[in-house]
Image 1 (cartoon, rainbow, N blue to C red):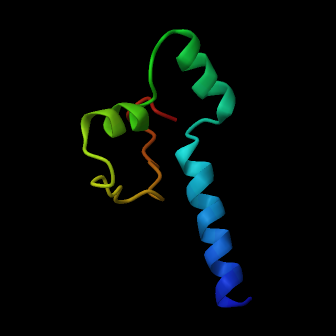
Image 2 (cartoon, one colour):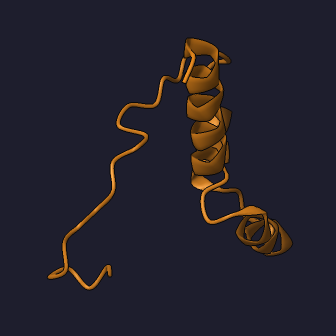
Length: 67
């Protein structure tokens, strides 16, 4: 796999993560006149200043009722 292919793959994964639960869930939030968490962060901060860390982290806990 070339470096360009890896970069494209990484960008595709990031875009999927940015969509959160998918476009349907985003639209559901918008129908309730709510913004997504990322939209609220973008609203609060100056343009281009937010750098999300740990974008690929997943919770594996089973004892918090989040599974």
